[in-house]
Image 1 (spheres, one colour):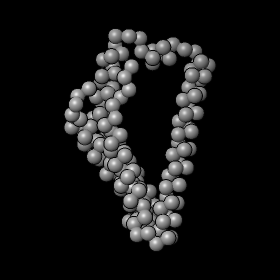
Image 2: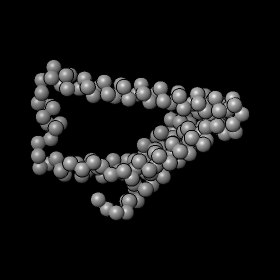
Image 3: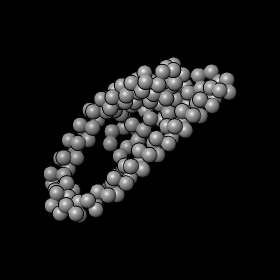
Length: 147
């Protein structure tokens, strides 16, 4: 693993950090829920687009490594339909729990900001948004786990 971050990763980290900050600070600037929702959807799209080069590099390196050995996807395709359903059930459960947990946390963050606004705090969502954006950007520099 290189000591210096690659340029696409640094750009993706910066874009992700800024997009996350804007996402969570949006209630301080935009009062309309619908407009805020469209802004957040656009920010998510921008952050996803910034991660495409890193995703492509990862897929390419994984394909090169998988060419030498039997891939998990080939083994999965060979299973009967009933076994595929059993194998996918935990995946579906984890994804569902993750989405539910994310929704709960998003609501908690928003309500906490609204409570700070009601208490008279100026720009109540922006302070925590800066923290969340910094953490999101820094997560790009966490290396993958070693086998």
